Length: 315
Image 1 (cartoon, rainbow, N blue to C red):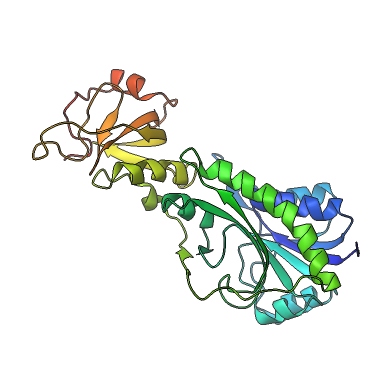
Image 2 (cartoon, rainbow, N blue to C red):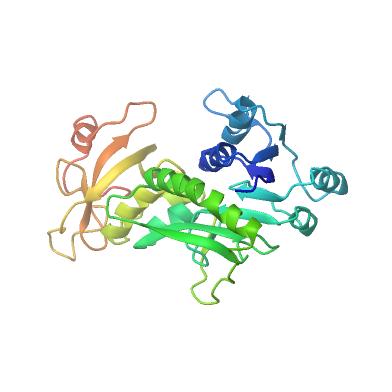
């Protein structure tokens, strides 16, 4: 396999396995680009990104520009004389001058089966939508939002037990396995990029904290998927009075029995924290009060005066 002179561009944990795979394959990583260090954690200490830390451990130079739109940053990038740039969850838009600089262009490790779930949160959106599968697409980048031609793609099943954190790790590992042969095929001409289909385009909008608000007027299946998709970020929650209760895990709670005209969404059905939804019910199996340790639903109710039949979220 031809050794390539590469720039790697990535920021979070998702990107680290791909960088590790490229190093293990013997490619020359001339520079890593990552988001600048930012405050994080309880103490808001300024921290380097996971990719930044891993690159330094491997002795690879790291650059953390706030933008790549200025001429100076673009000249520095072009001066690396890279054969290709590999991009995985970097977080900055690459202008045309950056895309054009490497001999083989810029190649992206994207966490969905394009053209479905272009954009910022493909892993969470796939679970939230109830998709049967997702995967990794290795794509040659252009100036559009995840619109480039595809070098390879591979699917992963989404099951009723799939969580965002588990799927994140599976896709990160899959991307690492796929990027090395994709680069080899691109370099030797044996792999030709195929345009994305025009049909089936969806967009994975960036997540906000408000996306985690549980709405009992939704179907129970959606609420349960919401917990699997949005834990740990942005996290799911509901309010009781002045308290915001985090929901860390949930499961289908079966049918919600009761007179349809009196059984409101949000009705507490039993002492295990089973809540009526628009159809069916969801059981909240792990919850957390502010400043407290996570507990199961039954333990939560033992410490919180909420009688069966009351409506969660009612004023």
